[in-house]
Amino acid sequence: MEAGLLMHILFFIGIIVESMTGALAAGKFKMDLMGVMFVALVTAIGGGSVRDMLFDHHPLTWIKHPEYIWIILIAALVATRIPMIIVKFERVFLILDALGLVVFSIVGTEIVMQNHNNMTLAICGGVITGVFGGILRDMLCNRIPLIFQKEIYASVAIFASGLYYVLIVFFDISVGIASIVTLICGTALRLIGIYYKLGLPIFSIEEK
Image (cartoon, rainbow, N blue to C red):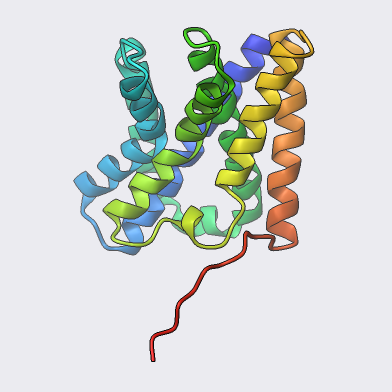
């Protein structure tokens, strides 16, 4: 299987999984069907849209591929019918979510690299694509975004984006091999973080 086709398949898995997590988050706050679909859309394509607007990349991904919207909406509706099944297979979804995070980070990094030969900008593009959908989801659900609390989520996106850039630019490795290596390493880091409950130091001020 070609690397491009593999990434395309994983990207589809990513938007499906993210849309389902968005739908479940909306369900926990008893939103109506419109709310569920909107939160699912924001979760799945919000990061890419923010990236495209910030880096003046047009047309936006979902405008160029409007079929993504239908895929996301269908996945969200499916999630509303089988919430207990999704919760039961939470470990599977955690693995798929980890894959989605790394795939989105790689895609975002690659898109920015096509127009900006700058490591900082490339990593920023990857991180925005990887995590901003979750940030918007949590904001719509009126809660502090998970990535700002305890899990190494954004850190994985930074690692994946940086690794992909270094492999392409400094080691002159093909896009396919760089994508696969980054996918394996980034996903492994995310799963290790989940298993060992790794997190960044927490800053806390206690008022007297």
